[in-house]
Image 1 (tube, rainbow, N blue to C red):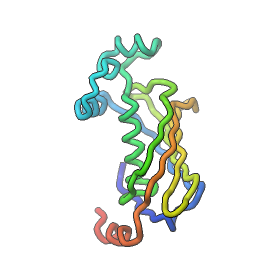
Image 2 (cartoon, helix red, strand yellow):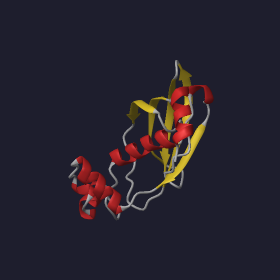
Image 3 (spheres, one colour):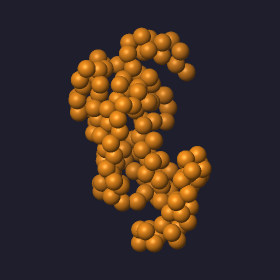
Length: 154
């Protein structure tokens, strides 16, 4: 993800969307699990993952890794740098995601009130099947921050 946005609440509108195609590697799963202490065998042993999710052929990407990657989209894309996450309310994962699987993440602004931006988030597989969804509230950057960002961005 590249740093490309810094939008204030005044620059945002209901209905604005950002869509990203994502996938995860085995190395990213291992790094996430090491960082968080998540030692669940389904994230490191294909046989364990297959017992929990018959028919899959690999380990399962942790739901938390997907969620934190979505948070990164708020911080880089919509609204962008300087955004502060207030709430993130995920649904359960409806189907597992394995390393190498592609997912399509959509962030859509559903409400702007008092400077707080509400989002609907959907995560789908390439066939359009819902993997999960969530709701989030984000505080976008203010104008002084945007001016600083414009003068200092990489």
